Image 1 (cartoon, rainbow, N blue to C red):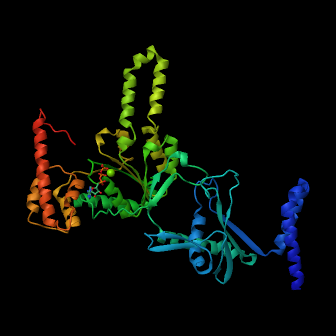
Image 2 (cartoon, rainbow, N blue to C red; image 1 turned 90 degrees about the vertical axis):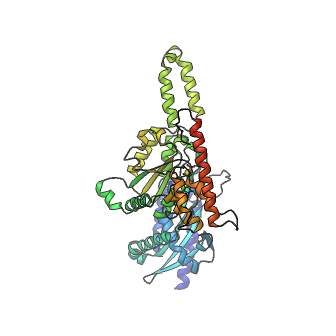
Image 3 (cartoon, rainbow, N blue to C red; image 1 turned 135 degrees about the vertical axis):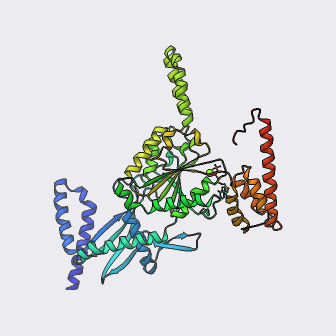
Length: 480
Ligand SMILES: Nc1ncnc2c1ncn2[C@@H]1O[C@H](COP(=O)(O)OP(=O)(O)OP(=O)(O)O)[C@@H](O)[C@H]1O
Ligand SMILES: [Mg+2]
């Protein structure tokens, strides 16, 4: 019986191979008929069911969540069974994640039922030679099981795999810092809009020098937001929050963003507006961001020429009369100016995208704008509802200094603190500058020397401020 059965299977396999290879030689009408019946016969003999999970599905803009979950799930069983594995380092190589290599197979047992997982990839169809090998390859996982267990596999096993896979992903998650790539690099169908590296900024709210009360308010606000999923759903508002960080250079705006990301365990998307060609590119970039993330646009006043655009509009009004005289040459000049300005992201474009994606993408996202010159920003950009919270990062005060002294020198109190408090009262010095003075420059330099250096630095700054005041005819010193 076994000999007969194996002979039948071999004949079928040969027939199937021949059919697959030469079916295109048959007339179309026969081909369809034969194919249907042939498949029926193969299905009758073959008792196994196969399910394929592709890495990219649908519009292929986003990696399939199911594929990622399976990849993570299989990392455990493949470590034990597979002979060829792929390794990826986590946390500066302290631990390594192993996953199944391409064209490898592992088995898994669920409630006594055995299943087979195989990994594979479909080579690109295009015949062109690419420098970016692999970007067009389509990877997949194939699950094979006996048709007798169809119900248990499709109803329980797959759920179990996806759940476990997501839990493993959460455990191994590394926070990422994403930066946008120029649109000329957005090739193929794989998402290459964002380049990423592991985010490992050490700044926290403990290392941030600012008034304790102000810090606590911000921390509470962030934590309330991150736990507010149900609340935001209840009030019918997209789960997002906008922060505007403003203040002079070196007052800790970028450090604050890192501290926020570390507190909430969010990814950071750092958008460089000047490399974005137009509003539609900005929209594509923002839609391609994940939840639990902070989207940052630093120095918004510099990256988007808001003031310039307004000035241009004013200039346009002034030149209205000239335009009437020679409208064609005037329009040509304007188009030239527009082309020269590079990025065409406009204020209204930015506002539309922010309002648009906020309402369309539900996941928790924080958007942060930073600026050194809050007065220069267009009120529309920072109105409540868009930028919910405005945080001023100011010059170093005595309380902020105490945080720095504790962190940099391990000093919580010292006899020189009284003198330092006095000088801080009427001197403007950025925390970055104070931090730099407090950092010992050699093994011999101790805490007290650093504090003395700081007093000297503060007094020198005070003197130069007074000198500048005297120089100014009307006695008003302009900031900076
Ligand atoms: N408030 C602060 N607390 C602790 N360290 C600070 C603070 N402000 C500045 N520093 C120190 O100064 C360095 C520069 O600060 P940071 O980049 O955060 O300033 P910034 O406000 O973003 O400046 P810019 O406006 O130039 O971007 C930081 O690496 C940090 O060491
Ligand atoms: Mg900064």
